[in-house]
Image 1 (cartoon, rainbow, N blue to C red):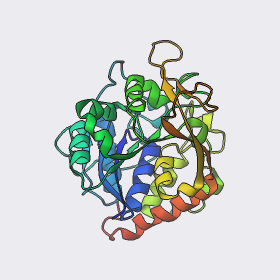
Image 2 (spheres, rainbow, N blue to C red):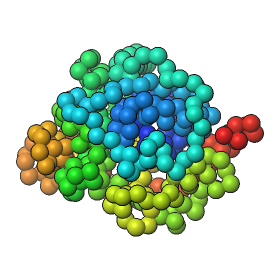
Image 3 (cartoon, rainbow, N blue to C red):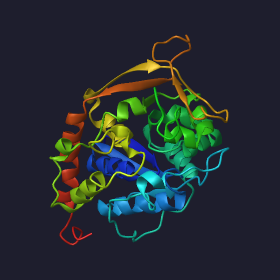
Image 4 (cartoon, rainbow, N blue to C red):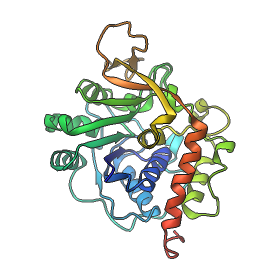
Length: 320
């Protein structure tokens, strides 16, 4: 059995590709479950989207648990202006055939981590509300988490405000709790993930005639709404798949251990992550911060990996 993971997510197009990549990686990666949180869209829709993506992959066996509907201490901010009203603009996915599993995502996180025969890796693709709540509910899970891999934060400029990346802006208090929990953390800030832009050249490995890959290409090639151009003019940045790609192919990434602090005071810098790249504070590092990505190789390997999902689909499922 390979690495056991839980994906905490707010799908979101790039979340969808991350989920598909993780499901394609089994059995090397075991997806123990998916927990959803409010972020790109509200939690009711992120839950539906997680179910839709699992259905696309032919994996209705994967547990999906709905989580927190609002940040710990702030009003919810969502991102339909980027990801569309349903969160998955560009992907024409049918409604899910099943409902989410019973039980709250936070309870699922605590129960699964505490009872797992092996340590669990958490993959955090959205605001950190569920994970912070789980740490508050049962602090002992910290010793049972092999690693927390986060897409969030910004070493330089933000993407939702001048100072803050979207996930940490939505729930900075949760992010502060998580970074102070003493967990082994790998962080993908915007300075890294904006290297993973889905340019036309990087999409040549995906097969537009294969149903699952066709949905991925449709999403990646969709018209770019306001704000998405932060990743450049050549395509959409694929932030969240970097998290799963790091688990699969760590040779494609470089970084260093740093101190990361989160601004929780309301104002123009709320949600900012201060990443002490040069170690000026003298404070102990609390995260391994990724700085460089071999994006060409990452997209090539992702295309090869998700091809397995299409090959695994029986003819009746290919019509989805």
